[in-house]
Image: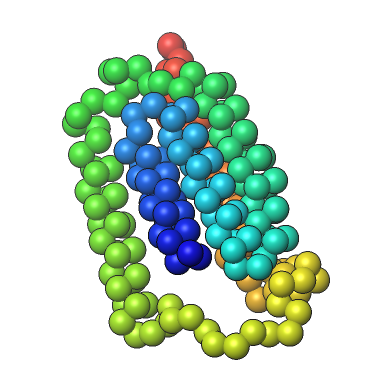
Length: 168
């Protein structure tokens, strides 16, 4: 039963992720992101990490998606049709394709080398708030800060792209 639930939730998570990327409407994309975050919270709860599940709902599904929706509404949600012409998108598509191939190659390397294999055994107190905080702010401080910088850069980029050009 738990395996069937996992596959149903995994299908929902992938559908939400695909919806984020393929949706032409930014509001629908944010709602698909909300679906993805909610499914990840259920995954955490299935793994007996109730604290992480609740934090996922409060911080990500609550605060981050609301912030994204606020920014979308602030900048209008839709770009003007002439804002991005076909010629100006070509370099971005090439860069995105190269970045996607590099990410796919890194994932394939991690799977083949066994670096992404699940670890066996459980550390004593690994699900407690103190253990999570200690690991997050010692071993994983750099990725934690890089994720926050990435979110900040994405928000600034969205505002810059949606800004109407000033007439001088």
